[in-house]
Image 1 (spheres, rainbow, N blue to C red):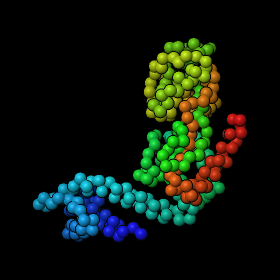
Image 2: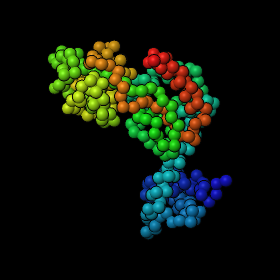
Image 3: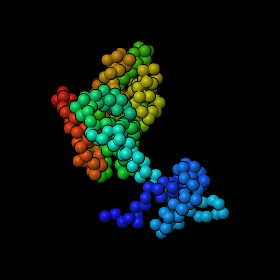
Image 4: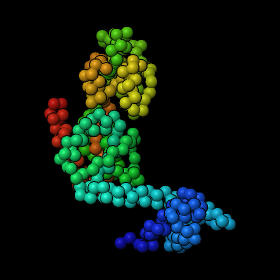
Length: 301
């Protein structure tokens, strides 16, 4: 059982958060539609319950202590989680909700076109998507799972490998016309576009072509989407995962160079906090992903 002393009521926490956010009991009272005296009393009751002063009183002003700022961050996160959970329950009381953090390009170009089949098979489940470029703390963010690139090293998390990243060098038809490439030596002088999260990608690619790594001089990007567009615009050569490259090549916006599908520096993974491993919507999503990936694994072998 959780000690009641450390479980203040919603009214106490809401008053405390409002005063912390607005800077005064008067402004907090307007936000909460309460009287100023009621807000002051609620804050005092919270301090008594916790046995710790949260605000210093200077005439009519309340100045939060360092402890209040730290406590306020936790309270805000907790209230946000409760609000989101309540909204999800009201919107979807039957099947549950899966909150998934995705990589922008993977989510847009690989996952999103396939999600329709999952929703058809699981009509009671709602999926909420949000983009995250870097790993995060599941306990703080509140996601049920995430799509992660790299290796299976996410701390205190379960891992399911989706597929290995394979990279293809892509160039615009116009740039290729101006700068023909018949072999790896023909890459000399071409701007090589780079991605922040793949610092060794070009070295790996040149090694797969049986060549020494070239000096990489080109624009630096934080997302595949902008790097792809730069390549289409003729600003340089982009190394793209095949799930991105194939679509652009098929539409003739880009042309592949030399050996295609070079193994990259990592794989795509579905990761989830251990505490959510048996969450039914997540179990359904994992099973669906495994079925989606079977044909891909068969063709790769």
